[in-house]
Structure formats: C-alpha cells, structure tokens
Image (cartoon, rainbow, N blue to C red; front, side):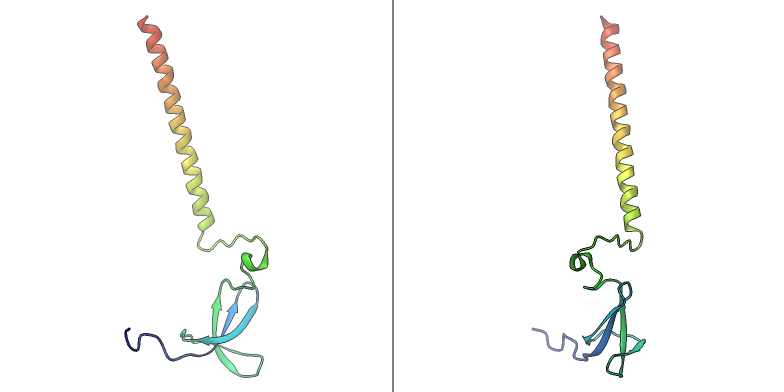
Length: 108
C-alpha cells in the first residue's frame, strides 16, 4: 500500500443541512472558511449540505422533488422529444402504408 495516502488532519466540523435546519458535529478534513457556534459554546468550522438524513426522502418517508440544476426539467424535455419523435415516425409509417395501398390499387 502507498504510504501517507489518507489525510491525517481530522478536526471537529459541524455539518448543516440547509433544507431541514439540522446540524451535527463530527470529524472531517473538509476545508471551509465559515464557522458556527455549537451547543457546547465553542466555535467549529461549518460545512453546508443540501441533503442529509433529516431531509432525504428515504429516511423521512416523504416524497419530495429535489430539483437541483433543473434535472427534472431536462428529463421532462427529453421525454417530450421522444414522444414527438415516436409520433412523427408513426405518421410517416402511416403515410407510407397509405401510399403503398394506393399504388397497389392503381397497378390493378
């Protein structure tokens, strides 16, 4: 194994879930410039997170739409484009079958 691969500068850090207003104190090496006063009266570095066990639907049992960076909109647009393409192909096939039927009646 490689030596000195893992960090050794662990320190107490407060992680704060922005959506659930939930915080917890743990050890981390994550760098940050923000600090917060914790329940014990001391100041600790602060890391803000979008989702934690307090707000994640798996742990809360609630269904929430967490649309980060427009992912839901992008998915809806892809689904609409796929439906439009499927409809266009169906119309093209329908026209081709009408032309084939008309051509066969004209040849008789």
